[in-house]
Length: 234
Image (tube, rainbow, N blue to C red; front, side, top):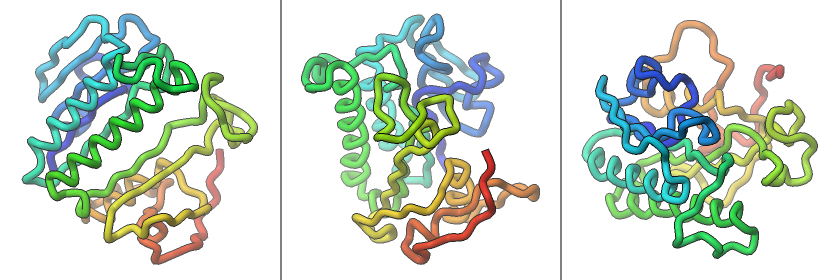
């Protein structure tokens, strides 16, 4: 597999802790939250780390991430690949390109969301152009509920809380011909389930020690509609 990480990486910013030391072939992004100083934009490949910008331009960041993702898809189209895209936004401070700034009735936050929506659409279009969309699993979710600029949709709690508003987030999965379109499922799932799901589909081996996550593929593929799982304590 060709592997790339584009976006936020908050698991260590020194060279020995970047994605390229954790199994990724290449990395492009800000290696922590963009409210940390300085918001440096890095490119890493193997052991080589390059500073693209000492201070990332927040108004161009989503566009730069998008260009990097499309470049990777073009270069990896002839081999299996894994692209991990943790967008920096809508973490504050927010930024939007001139193409989207001032276009949303919801202010800058809305502009940011519309640009992210456009960027995800660009990835779908490129997968279709490369004739890879029916053989590529795309998963879209969030790491936590919103801070005060966003809405938890009527749920109690926000980012940092273990109430539903802090941990319950949307999760969408797309793979035409394998995942039925237009279906919803209310079973409990966790981002910890992504690893065993991908391992099942790729035939990769998992560690011998027990994992907290369980494969979501029976639910995503429609083979199961209800699943009993071990209690998830938090």
